[in-house]
Image (tube, rainbow, N blue to C red; front, side, top):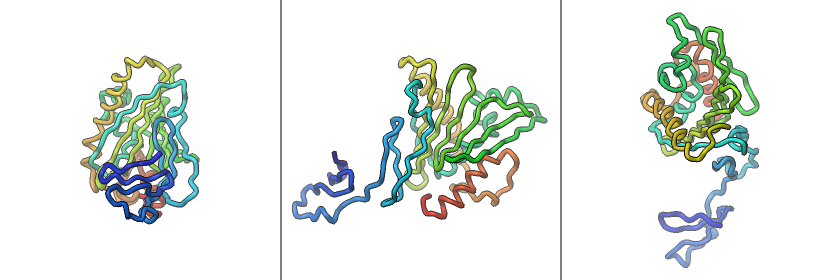
Length: 252
């Protein structure tokens, strides 16, 4: 029922109270506590509310992360970037036929012509937003959902099936981001197939890595600080949210 620090063995209970300092029998443990943050375990992930002392709302979690009728595959990556660069990349549709031309962008790549037009829609939701791309007036049936502050769900259209890829973008130390990719599906559920789906999801993430890590400036810039076009609509929505809500509150 305690957490133990692997460096010096200090122990803390779920309320943050210090339960022991090895090699220091005279230590005043009551003064050596840690900040306890509200957590939930949902969908095999730990959700942390980082405002100490606050009364937290329950996290809004995509249904595919908890649906018992779906199989889930988890992949982790560490990227050398600010988390905002990774997050805006996850909401960006026009890069798919270029960065992901052999994977999830293949359908766009086949249909594109030099005169093609992509239209991006954005709809605010209680949890963040929903965005969809139409190429030359035709929607693929897939769509993206943004779950504030740092999660994306890509719903992939497969007739008669359910499949979604989730990206959780987690700030680590300065200049580094932990990416957790969770694929969920209601088909091909044999355990022996898990390595295949893990490889596929990892391949998609690896296609993005070089582009994201080389983007400058390191932190995504304000929405109006760069020249943008219509297909930037979803990423601009994220940038506004980040600068108007997260960054000003100190939660970034």
